[in-house]
Amino acid sequence: MLTVYSPDHQLHHASELKDGKVSPCFEMPQRAEIVLARSLQVGLGDIVPPQAFGPQHYARVHSARYVRFLQQAWGEWQALGHSHDALPLVWPVRDLRSDIEPEHIDGKLGFYAMDAGVAITAGTWQAVSSSANLALTGASLLHGGLHSAFALCRPPGHHAAAEYMGGYCYLNNAAIAAQWSLDNGSRRVAVLDVDFHHGNGTQSIFYDRSDVLFVSLHGDPRRSYPYFSGHRDETGRGAGLGFNLNYPLPHGTAWDGYGEALQHACGQLRQYRPDLLVVSLGVDTYEGDPISHFRLGTGDFSRIGAAIAAVGVPTLFVMEGGYMVDEIGINAVNVLQGFEHAA
Image 1 (cartoon, rainbow, N blue to C red):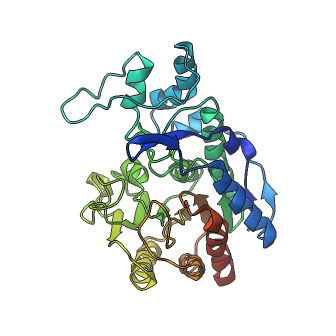
Image 2 (cartoon, rainbow, N blue to C red):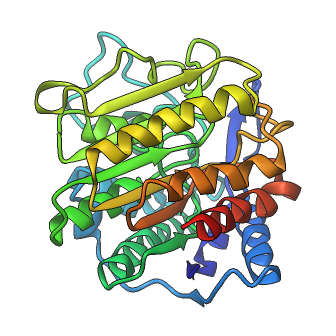
């Protein structure tokens, strides 16, 4: 399987506010490097750089002002004399105004964030735009005739919505690729999210639409991040009613429960008959992941790949989470090899 990769991700290594203290993010550059090394070790396929895509493609799923914020935020932060990571300070919760963009960077950081895990650094814009371009390149390669490709995106994207960042995510790589595919001739696209954490951003972006089926398997939001989305009764709205499917699974889920839910989800995907399937590939469902609560073993990731292959459509894998860094390469590549062997 061909892998799309860029070293630009190394420009972003941020801090986060977690457990009451500021510390380096679990989402670190080492993650992508370990996945890349594993793909080379097993001879997964060629490694290619991304094509150049501009912000107008990101603005097909994000608002123009949000994209502009991401481009300009570090400059505005630095203009105040700061050289450390920019983290949000205040959020427009409940009855506070959320329609008027603040002029001050402190206000903007909170206005466009859902949590304190999305610091802005000097290299953030270059890293996140390059990450989105990896997914766009993968989508364009599939439109050119490839049956599958792997976009080794970092930072990840599935928590980013039209106008906010969160959960280490800034631009929604999977959604951007799905929209590009629709803009370039696909009639229907599906997004399958197998990350432990619900892809709230992807759900939000496509919640009112029937041309994208969003399907997510994740930890029950009553106990797991992002806490405020991913319940089973969130099934879409308006034209999108019935085109959003959530499979919240209990704390400690192992393969028996996960595999059953995955088979049902893949059945729904086959019924939808998409022209393209985008897989938000998180491997933080692994037992022992430091910020997740499932118990999948290394061999189970090959089964995930095989189940996805049975959907039988061109498939773009987009890297999302996975924080047990020593095992992330084996687990991610196992999914890809499982898919290839079963396809």
